[in-house]
Length: 152
Image (cartoon, rainbow, N blue to C red; front, side, top):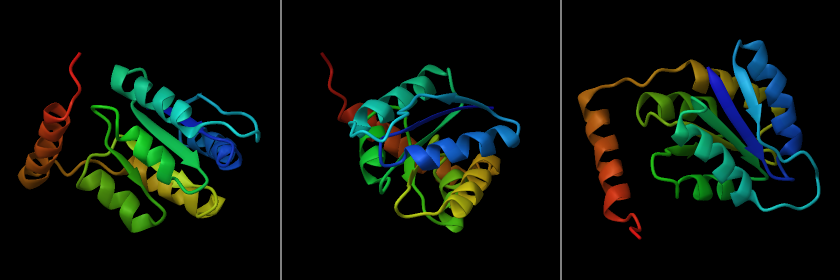
């Protein structure tokens, strides 16, 4: 699986630690930055990752900032992206099984590297349950995207 990963300055350390871990699981990683601790704008990195996921250049995306909140907000503005902010193992599994999320967000200031690795492992290995009720709910979310899309 190809994973696009991005972070702002507040998440760069955790992002860098996760890259090797994800590769050790047998996945290919596309590092979209940032690669510094100087202040940068998280939406730039969230959109870079989400663009790859929507285009099919990456199967899934992972975003890291200080709390994960900003990245999640920015990512969920992109039609076709279902990004979940996750800081625990149960949510990592549930968001894949029930919501078929394609982008994971975490906060470096909230979760340590060991827990972050477990979250990523569970999230990458968990399949969407594909049950009718879950498909119906995702369909409703997609309808909302269409209803509120800005058409030029």
